[in-house]
Each structure stands twice: as C-alpha cells, then as structure tokens.
Amino acid sequence: MLQVEGVSAGYGKFNILSHISIKVDDGTTVIMVGSNGAGKSTLLKAISGVVPPASGTIHFNGQRIDGCPPHRIVELGIALVPEGGRIFSELTVYENLKMGSYPSSARREFAGSLQQVFQLFPLLKDRKKQMAGSLSGGERQMLAIARALMTKPQLIMLDEPSSGLAPKIVAKVFEFVATIKAQGYSILMVEQNVLKAVGLAEYAYLLETGTLVYEGEKQEFLKNPKIRASYLGL
Amino acid sequence: MSNLILNGLANGILYGGGLALLAVGMNLIFGVLNVIHLAYGQCVMVALYAVYVFAVLLHLPLLVSCVIAVGISALLALLIHVAVVNPLLKAPLINQLLALAGVMIVLENIILAVFGSDYLGIQISFPVFAIGDVYIKISSLIPFGVGIATLALLWLFLNRTYTGLAIRAIVQDRDMAELMGVQTGRVYWVTFAIGGILAGVVAACFAPIYTVHPHFGAGFTLTAFVIVVLGGLGNLLGGSIAAFLIGVISQVTGVVFTSEIGEILVYAIFIIFILFRPQGLLGARVRT
Image (tube, rainbow over all chains, first blue to last red; front, side, top):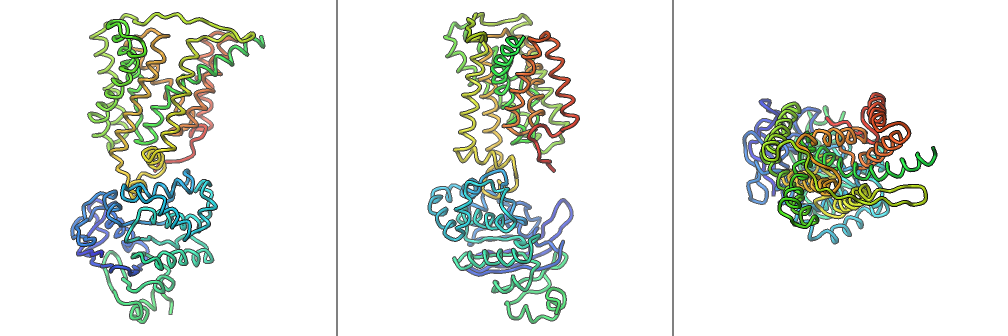
C-alpha cells in the first residue's frame, strides 16, 4: 500500500535521509528503529508532506504522493501521530477529535468515527468536555491516536509514541497501538523501544545516520546479532 | 465624587465594548498569521470615508451605507492580503512591518488626495438618558451593543464551524493543523476577510458619532495594538478583558481628573504592566 523508493530528504542542503526504500503492505505493522538523529522522524515527515523529499518517489495505493501538500496526503488516507502527540492543548478533547475529521471525506462520517473512537477508547468519552491540555501524558497519546483515527486513515504513522513517558504508561501506549492494529489499520511506527515495538510488528527496518542498514521479518530481526547488541542489550 | 466614579465606570464599560471590537480584528490576524497588521486603523479610516460617501454624498440610508462600507472594507482587506501580506508571510518580521507601514501611507494619501484634509462626518446628535444618577450616551451605547453582538457572533463562528475550529487550531499549532487537513493558505485569506469585516463594523459604529480625517487611522492602530499587547498577543479573551480595563481606567480617571490626564495614566499603567508581564494578561505561549 505504501512504497517509498530511493527517497532523500532533509532541511535546506543537508540531506538527513539518503536513498531510503521501504514498503508497508496492506494491514501490516512495520516498525523502524534507529538511534536519535538517524532520520526516522524525517522519513515520516517526508511521507506526510511536511518535508517534501529532495529526490525519490513515494506511492500510496498506486498513486504518487511525493510533493503533495500535507492536507492532500491526509485526505488520501495517511495520518501522522507526531512525537509527543502534539494535541491541541487549548481545545477540548471533543474539539481535538472534531479537528481530526477536518478532511471533507472524514467530515461526512464524523458521527460514526466518533462512536468508533469512543468505543475503542471509552476514557475519551468521559473526558470529552475537558481541555486536552489537562490530560496526562498517556491520555494525550491516546487522544493523538484517536484524533488520527478520526481522519479516516488507511495507514497510521506513529512517531515514537512511547517517548518521554514513564515505563508503566509506555505499556499502556503499546496497548493503544495493539488496539488500532486489531482494527485492521496498517501501521508504520518509529520506535526506540525495540523489544516492545517489534512484538507488534510483522516487519522491521533499522536506520542509521540516514541509511537503511538492515531489514527483515520480526523473527530474523530479533536474531540479528547487531540488533541484539545495540538495541536489545543482549 | 462617588457619583462621578459611577458615571465613569458605566461609560468606561460602554467605551470598552467599542475598544474590544476595534482590537479583535488585529488580534485575530496576529493569532492566525503571526502578522502585526500595522495598517488596521487605516482600514477603519477608509471604511469611515466609505460610510460618508454613501450616506452623505450619495444620500443612501445610513444602515445601507454601513453595510456597503463593511463590504468595501472586506474587499480592501483581501486586496492587502493578496498583494502585500501573503507574499511576505515567510519574510522576516521587519519586512512585513515596513510593507504594512507602506500600505498605511498609501491609504492615507489616497484618501487625502480624494477628500482633502477637512474633517468630514455625518452630524447626528444622539440623546443622553439617565438611569438614576448615571448618564448614558446613546452614542456610546451603539458601539458597545454592536461590539458585544459582533464578538458573540465571532465566538459562535470560532466555536461552531469547522473553519473557526481550524483557525483556533492554527493559532496553537500550525503544522499539526496542516496534518489534520487544513489548507492554511485558505484559512489565512478567510481570516483577513473577517478582519476586514470587523474593521468595517467598527467604522459603521463610529461613523454616526465621530468626524473622520485621513490621519485618524494611526490612533486606531495604536489603541488596538496596545489592547492586543496588554491582553496577550493573539489571545482574543485577553484582548477583550484588556479593552474593558482600558475603557474603565481611561473613563474613570477622565472624570476624576481630566481626559488628558486619563490618557496619560492609561499609557503609564500599560507601560508599567508590560514591564512586569511582557506576555500580557493571558498570553502564555512563547512562539518558536
């Protein structure tokens, strides 16, 4: 469903990514691991149109999307949950969700999406009139994921959903991801917490200083000595 | 004495409603586009001339003239957005300010060339009525009433429509709003048009009361800017509170001392306040 081919991207003249090719198949969860500054977030930004790629192509459902503006890409069915969630803290929980249904295609289905989201995350229903800024760290991630669902996506991209959260909350956040995975969404997740993330994934990529150094199915990935040494501490 | 203060208070609240209306357009534009609309007062001034042209020169009914003036003001705002603000959105702040200062000079001189420098106005004298010992001028009740009604409509628009929601989302996090499917460019021109409509409504309220002169715009801009800064840049609620504070302080000190001393006190208080709380009353966010 998503094909990234030979993409280089960055800010100004500096290319943070060079010649990256990845793919996400329909209904699968793919994770991308790598240390800080490896370019994981930049790749997600390139796919979502925030940082247009300098070269290479990105196809989504057969349609070429590199160079499209962010609003167009979300309309096509790719939602990004950025690092930290970036919820609108001075809007209520309900307004945040409504904001998620901004694309015209999603707007028509607002009521249905809202019901679905409240069913998956009942806590949000109880808090819907609360200011989003008053939520705890884990609840913010929940809202950010729910807001992404409201855009009626086919592919959800999560940028380090566990970053900056206490270990107990991290487990919760991976439960949220498992919840949406169970709904059949395709997921592309960037994570440093390799062991937990790989548990959810079918396929994994390892990114180092802007280039792909390893990729493989979940089992092979966990057996790779380099990954065991650097990311699993084994 | 207490009677005087009560009168000052009542008139200050009424005056504050007009001030809140004056400042809200500039505030909204800053919140959404991060642009200080330096020529905002000049837009109000042009709209005042528009009311004059239609009501006095063309003998149209006042209300009709006001509606036309609001329309002209919205068109002028769109013109300024397309020609000046939009091309400079990513330019340094100083370039934006200089360009808008240019707009200011252009507007003033066009009006000066067409209408000359005489004070023009629709002379309507409004009665004064009394509630107990408090005297209320109808002429200050109009901007107050229209101001409150307009702010209420604006509130509904921002809270009940998708475009309004997008505006509030952009104020908080522009990139995230785009990732939610908001076309920021479109919201920008909508915001500028709303700013123009608000400037036009201000003019419609002031037209029956005040005379107009090509150089009046600067005063409007300054007053609006002071209110916006005092309330917290881009914070509409803060701006409205600031408008009422300034209204009350200027009117109460005005009746206790003189209106000149009142003006001095307002700005002195403003400067001292900003020294200690530079982000304004409700401004907390620091933009990066």
